[in-house]
Length: 434
Ligand code: SF4
Ligand code: SF4
Image (tube, rainbow, N blue to C red; front, side, top):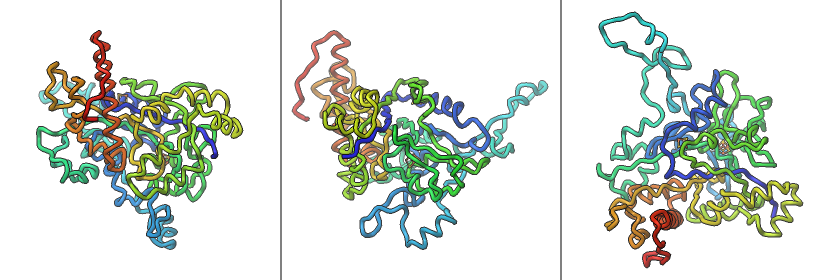
């Protein structure tokens, strides 16, 4: 056992309203300058949808991340050694600015100060990169207006996988928001892909950073990151990424996105993990074992043996205490209601999500409150507006069981709290359907 400490974030998706306060405050703090106009270290994407950059989940298209070669060994990208060496120089698997979408603004000055005219003024969008008029063809949350109907099926690869299992009629469309930052992976493929050794993972807290002095602008990290959460600054010629607001963390403050989140849905905490178990867990070949293998690397911070090993590894008393008090540990390990995003990418992401319970839509509840009638609650999980299968494609490599279990726990908690708030005796029985 080799004990290390890692900062992690859990986001409760039922609470996200897609307001983008997190994105904007992050941009003001970190990417409000030339060369990073198109960059959102924090973005909030519509699901189902294409994401940011568009189609980033299509690993066949980008040939990114960790994949297994024919002998089942972990490797970065496929192909012969020569092809991989050549790829370092060619690196064709990069998103273009239209995949991120051309950032635009308007000539507000002209709009407000133009002389009185008979016709309505027309504001033409101007590219923030070129300053020229631009034709806007895509933007953040464009998918909101498209809904999850049949038109979207081919565009969201996760939805396309389900098209024969989940029938999407007009009345059955669904939508939710997925805020994303860099995952500060336990097994970061951005760092493994960097020919200059410029990307490193801090041993004290697991934050993944780019050394700007060492970066030579190869952009291998951009194609290697399966989440597409590392960006190329076209002015400085260097890669940049979310820093987990380390200057704030170092003085005991939360990240900007967490502090400003309107929904108060982001939890930050410390996890202790077994560094020896990471590679093994990332190499699991059976998809159904991916989520349990990721869960298996976390160590119980209350276990005296773990505490002794952590002290020996130089982890401070404050951090061990923080791991013991961590809301993130409770949500991920104790309650098992937080799940990783795309464990099949094998980078061991450290931003986890409480899946959205949303309203249960076809439960005949006498109270009229959908899904809050205790007797119907657990059997109704499969009747959620958001198909459990879709959530499983996002969070557990298609395995339904852990997602259903997380939703059942959330439903139980919602039922319990509803009774408490109404001053009623909570029904503590476990329905037969569980
Ligand atoms: Fe690197 Fe991408 Fe993982 Fe962030 S999400 S640590 S950029 S591989
Ligand atoms: Fe969602 Fe919070 Fe960001 Fe608003 S600030 S979009 S609620 S994560």
